[in-house]
Structure formats: C-alpha cells, structure tokens
Image (cartoon, rainbow, N blue to C red):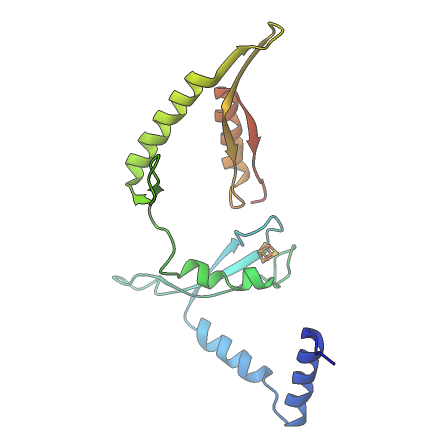
Length: 190
Ligand code: SF4
C-alpha cells in the first residue's frame, strides 16, 4: 500500500512514542530560546484574504546602534480569526521577511528590454505620475457611443494588494475615481 501523507505522519508519531521520545518539551524549549529578549509586534499575514494575525519577534530594538533583526514569526493566539494558527504559507513568513532575494528597490523593465533595472523611489514616482497623466489624456472618454456623458478613463486599471488598509483603500478609491478610472479592485482586510 502506498502511504498517504496522513498515514505517514501517523506512523511517524507512533514510532516516536514507541521509542519513548516526547519531542514536545524540546520544541517548546527551542521556541522559548528563540524569542527570549525579543520585542513583539502584532501584524497581519500579507498573503491571502483570511487576514490571520501574527506576532513578529524582533531582537535588538532597544539597544542603541543595533539594527533590529526579525528572529521569529508565529500566529497570534489572541487574534479572533486564526487564534494562533497559521497555514504553511503563513508559517514561512520569516523567510519572506529575511530573504536575500527580496526586492528592496523599485524596478522597471523598459519597452523592448530583456531585463529589469533598479531605479530610485523618486524616479519611480516621477515616471508613474508621467505615465498616468499621459495614459489618462490618451484614453479618457467624455461621451459614449450614444452621446451620453460618461467621463471615464478606460486605459488605466488599479489592482490593490492584500496588505492595504481600509484607510489606504479609501484614498485609492477617491484618487482613482477622480481620474475616471472604472477598473478598480482592492482587498480591504486590514
Ligand atoms: S496564514 Fe495562511 S490562511 Fe492565514 S492569512 Fe496567511 S496565507 Fe492566509
């Protein structure tokens, strides 16, 4: 019989018990050692719309001349949505925060280019503003085919992110609607 993941884990648990090892205290001890002297920051998992609460443990916040370092992330037991649990994706959040491949700067791939290039935040804002203005000017529709006034911008779409707050989304809706943008989606959850 081919073992399923469930039967494999069950068999593994029985083996551990048969050998007389109880790993729970060791796991608890390792967790305690990891978060000793850390500062707790409550936050929200950024991945999906379930919005599980998390606690980020940071070392070094209180010391001068020390760069704070995130050392552990776990589910928030007081959070009404997840009550301390995290799915496998949420459980890997530490690797999302501390990752040498994480993008720390805006990047742009120019038309026809085969690679991305780093640009500064100021340059990114300037270029985005320029392109928004240009696209709106080129695609704004004042009247539809029947001559009715519609005043809409059909050349721009906005897609929000899962860590956007309600307040941020409020401003997004206000600013996008003021441009006439109709294709607008966001994920209010924080
Ligand atoms: S822990 Fe999992 S279920 Fe919860 S918000 Fe993150 S990705 Fe979604």
